[in-house]
Amino acid sequence: MKTYAAFRRAWRPATEGEPHPAIEEFVTSKLAHYADDRDFPARDGTSRLSPLIASGEITIADCAAAALAAPPTKGREKWLSELAWHEWFEHVKAEGLDAPRLEPRWDPPGERVERWRSGETGFPFVDAGMRELAATGWMHNRARMVTASFLVKHLHADWRLGERHFAELLLDYDPAQNEGNWQWVAGTGIDAQPWFQVFNPERQRERFDPEGAYCRRWVPEWGNGNYCEPLVDLAAEAAEAKRRYQAALEEARLSS
Image (tube, rainbow, N blue to C red; front, side, top):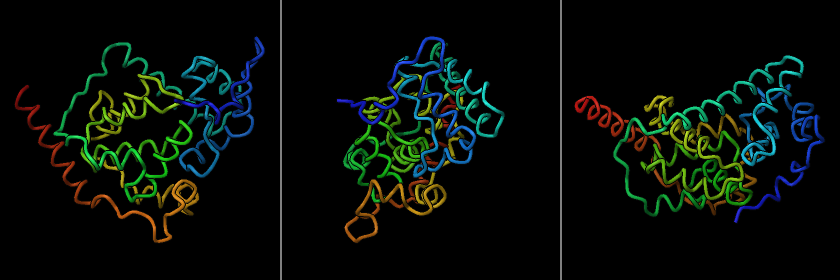
């Protein structure tokens, strides 16, 4: 069962005609540095407003109005662009443009996918994200991208397996956002990242958790000799993913 305990502080009713206190707190304390801090999961740099948006407690319009009323900063512009992405995925879903456009050959689910679900892949950034999700019902956005890419590009699992797993656990679950972001990472949707782009979880950890604070919080056994061995060879599986996507692309061209 999903729990809202981690976000109880934000679930305070707004006074009519006034900004929601959770929006006001973010705009006042974090917005100016949002662009610099948002990609580092060890920092408290994101808005964490998504559960309130998904529930209807607040709207994208509420957030945009608060941003536009704030002093212009790089953080404000970045947040506005992220709010626009949210609306883009809503548009794609509403217009029926959300069907996958590229389908490489997926492996059937098995033990490797189960280890991904339980946060036991041997790659600390992936495992930290999956354990954060299981424990709190939320996952930092950078970790969402890395865990999703690992499932699709390194384990060659159908993105819909991951989408359903996230749907079961996320406090901020929204069909348009979840499906849109999974297809973006998988490279299969209408406006996806290039299919040949693969997030390397070790490089992502080095770049966005350089001191290891996020990984150590959720994977305390990392580095003490008790951590599991890496599940896959990253370079080999990334190359295999590109081969499969290229084959799917060629098949699509021949059939068109």
